Length: 54
Image (tube, rainbow, N blue to C red; front, top):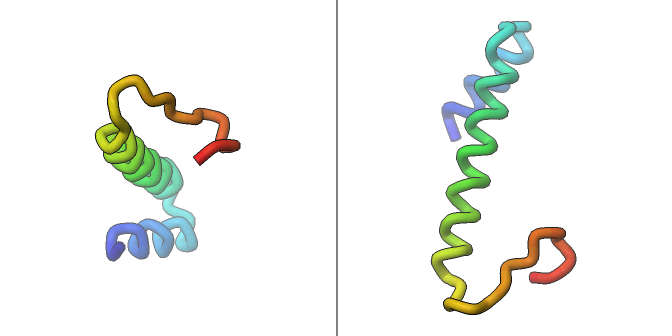
């Protein structure tokens, strides 16, 4: 969480590389969540990709 706060501060200061670094961290976290969700699914189950089914 501290890393995200530092990146947000850097964005406010106008550091040009900060938005890309923030985006990379957000996507890394999303991939981590997706891997965990896929690991919990049983074989043969479908994972909704459009956000309409949980």
